[in-house]
Length: 377
Image 1 (tube, rainbow, N blue to C red):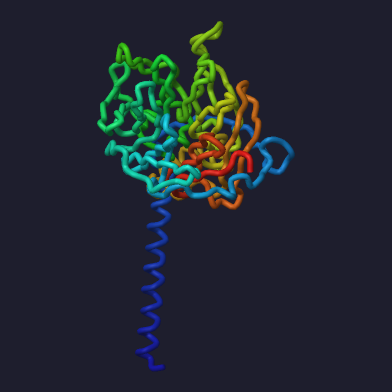
Image 2: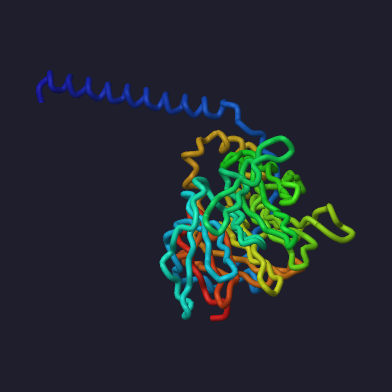
């Protein structure tokens, strides 16, 4: 190698080192700026209870009851909620705004799904009222009523002079009163809200006679599924971010007060439905996330994570690939849990007992389509 070649090689090496040091300096500077940047939230400290074990004997013990789930339809990619009309036809909304209807033949085989209506929003909660109208909680459009011909009427988008931020799930009393959740004043699902660990959700009531909307409960940790008891003496609302079901009393000596119906669920509860026996079925969107529980007890970490752009955290907040449904009795006792530990079916938002089947829906991030399993295999 000539002297000139040696000098050229030495010069190239020096340039690489200079560029490497410059890049390292930029990275270090970026880290320092990120750490010094004020957090958008002030996280609250919370020591989450230890998650129930899937290994110990008891109602949470792991099984494969959901592993044999069959696909009913995949036209609704992410059927957040599922309901049935008086004729036994299935209805499920999708994240693109469409609501699909599925008819079953004499052998209970699903026929091709058809579009029933399009809210041009995101229809989540679905329930038929006594007049045959489909009442819809749409996270973008508010509380809606859709007649049998698919015509849409907006029932309410405001409460107490302010907006309903994220109408999510609902149930309807025999007198027509609609109970529904306003999930969060963030207006959408944000990791920043999990990091903050403060309550931003509400339980609302809509009176179809006066057309007035009122607040029953506020300061809920991501208000989600809503269901009435068989006697309509209370209404339940899921608080997803604190792994619990809260009960609001509508009748009796505790009327107007609330308490905890079920706590320390093995994951994030989503929708709640009630079966003919008065049992409550809870779709668990994801099993517990150890990092989230650790973060709640270490606010410095939560504050740091709240500064990370949401787009970079979408994957981190994806559901665990473990399908889970919980069944509770009328008094809040855990009766059973249904699992798919293989994760073929996961991200479950709703479980509806209808006939001899348990119908299952999911949300974006989970598996796709409406599925069902036999209640008594």
